[in-house]
Structure formats: structure tokens, C-alpha cells
Amino acid sequence: MEDRILGLHHITAIASDAQRNFDFYAKVLGLRFLKKTVNFDDPGTYHFYFGDEIGSAGTILTFFPWTHIKAGRRGTGQATEIGYSVPAGSFDFWLKRFDEHNVVYNKPSERFGELYLPFLDPDGLKLELIVPKNPDPRVPWTTDAVPAEVALRGFHNVTLTLTSQQGTAAVLTELFGYTLTEQHVNRYRYVTDTVPAAAIVDLVEVPGEAQGVVAGGSVHHVAFRVKDDAMLMRVRQRVAERGLNITPWIDRQYFHSLYFREPGGVLFELATDNPGFLVDEPLAELGTHLLLPPQHEPRRQQIVAQLPPIV
Ligand code: ZN
Image: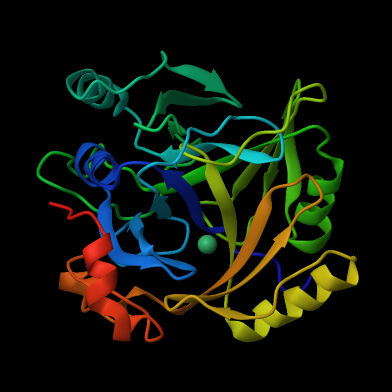
């Protein structure tokens, strides 16, 4: 198949309190705070980006923090778990750190031959630290509190919960070039070999489960990586030919995007590598300025006045 998808690009979720969200991901988990901007469609709200040093595809988790948003509900038609890869032997460090920071977690367990440690972010978003079968080659961002030997490498997988996995599986295999590699009970693992990491999508089929509610503590959309604009538009054509509604090309400042809802109900995005996060800040200063896209720059003063300060 031509134009196979290059794994995950980013995942976007919803938080409530902005400061609490920043503290958890940048301080407790030790991810790089890559970019502080606003929701381009709702510029009175922040858009935070966390990832590795330069914001490589497959490491980027983004949040819309809406202060007064209600809690969402996990259910079908949603991405329900985000898995980060960590080195073997790092769980002792993380269990101690979770205790120190009152993080809610469950005891480590094993799935598809990989140890994982499930935990929740402050809004109840389900996350996992996973020790992948094959060591993860990615270089992590590190902090004084979270050194390289335990630091998060980026995404290992994302899990989608569905009433039926069939339609979603067809998108992954026939349009994106993923392959079903493993199945256990109602969990189906789809993998692409186009990239060494962030290559896994797990589909969990729960026929009787109620539809989830996307709000605080839930995933808004899952973005898959394409190389460039030419590939983006070729994939757009294929998605449209299957009868799925897909948006026109959208400039997201750090990447170019298309969105469509896959048959299982999850909002998918396709996002390019270009132009990347250095387009409006140098590498050493990523995340240190409040950045607005050109269309919102004239209203900077009013926008800043609406945003809670982050320290
Ligand atoms: Zn996105």
C-alpha cells in the first residue's frame, strides 16, 4: 500500500484547571512544555502542548484547559487510554513519585507480554506507563526530577473503546496500512511497521457499553502522522472515496491537518510533520511565550486578559 500512515502524530484531550494540568504533565511526568498557545477556534482558552525536546510526532500530547468544564464519561466511540513507553526497571521510581504527588494508580500488570502501570491525570484521564517489548530508541526530554533512565519516551499506543471494532479496523488496515498483530479477549492490537515507536492502536470492543461523553478528562481527538502536504491530500482523497466526511485542509500553525470521524465514532485527524514547533520560537525557548496565530494577534491584549496566568 502506498502512503501508509506514520504512526501517531499527537493526541488532544480536555482538562479543567490549566495550572493543575501544566503541573502534572510538565512537573510530575517531566514532559517538555513545548508550546503555550490558544485554541484557534476559541482563543479565550489555552492550548498546551507537551512532548519531547522538539515536539517530534508520536510524543505530542495537547490539552484544551476549560476551567469550568464538567467531567466527561469514558465509554464507546472514544479514545480511552493513552500509553507512554518507559524503560524497563523504571516502575519503582514512578510508583514512588505517584505516591509523593497523590496520583491515582493501579498496580502494574501485563498485557501482550508488556508490563504496564495504569494511572489517572488530575482530571481522570486514563494513562499508562508501558515497558515495550522492543526497547524504545527515542531520546527523552529530561528534568532534574525525571532523569533519562526513567523518563517517558513518547506514545507507545492509544486505546479506542468501541461497540464494534470492525469499521475502525477497516480504516486502520485498508486506509492507514496497519496490521492486526495480536488479540486477547476483546482487545485487538493494530500495528504499523513504518515507524519504530508510537506505532500501535488497540481497539477494545464492548458491545453493550454506553457511548462516552467527551468533556473534562477525556480525549478530544487522535491525530495520525503523514509526511507532508502532498501525502495529506492523497490520504484525504482515499478517505473521501470511502464515503467518510473529511474537512478541507486546515493550517494549525505547527502542522497542517484534516479531520474526519471514523465509523466507530472517534474523531481522527491527519497531521503533517511540517512546519513544526520551531516556526515561531527557537528550540531553547519553546513553551516560554504565549503564541497566537496571525489571525488572533491583533486581539492579544483582550485574549491575555481572559487567560489564567501559569507559573
Ligand atoms: Zn489535533
